[in-house]
Image (cartoon, rainbow, N blue to C red; front, side, top):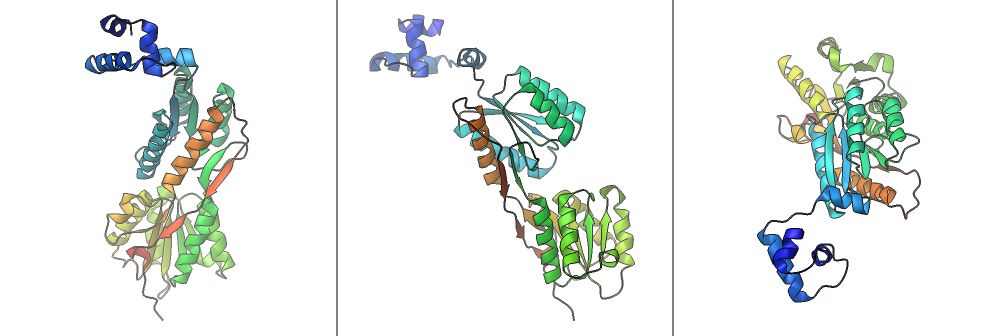
Length: 323
């Protein structure tokens, strides 16, 4: 600003007023200053501004797995929405490692971010650490008591998947993922509520024991068609490769449905049915709530925004029901 002021023949305070719009400046002086700013590619010192205004205009976003296309879509939505409020995001990827997450929380604190959006890799430890640093924070994609959250009901999504597979005529079921996953609990409950004996008709396949799925399918009784629900689209793709390897017809013999509705589900043959989350709405709601939390003039309370999911039906579950 000192250099621009000298070249324009005005005070440094006048240059500051032009940049910040904090007070009226004559049109010709404003035009001269702006021309010099553009000519010399002047950029304000954000760190200095943050010290004066007590705001960094930075939001930290902590996610668990950047390799998952779902999180790429979430980040794109969050970044787009944050920009509308004049904020820039700092992205941190923990790869499900709590030590990494702890380090990133400390780094974000040192950068004086105004707020943090987090997908915690360990709910109890992660959020205890976050609470101790006293920065406005919001949990995304998970619903956790004691924290403001923007998420979907994984339990209800699991129930919807079970209803879809049952309506399409499948009579045996497998969930590929963790037994503790709310999607699994909803999936299993709906199967049981629909009159199936879960001891005979339902199995949970942990992702590190995927070969168990082969045995389950190959040992199934004739004319019992299996519906497989994978906890995300990446796992659904792995399942599809296994089904092709053992020459099982999808969807006539085995149906397959994933979760997150990423590009993976659309770009394979047969393309895979998947549960879609409202990505844009998650970005919009999470940033809006966080901005309100950052504003010292606003009183905020704990919010739990639970958004609806939708099954996108594709070839992998479009079965001709056999009699």
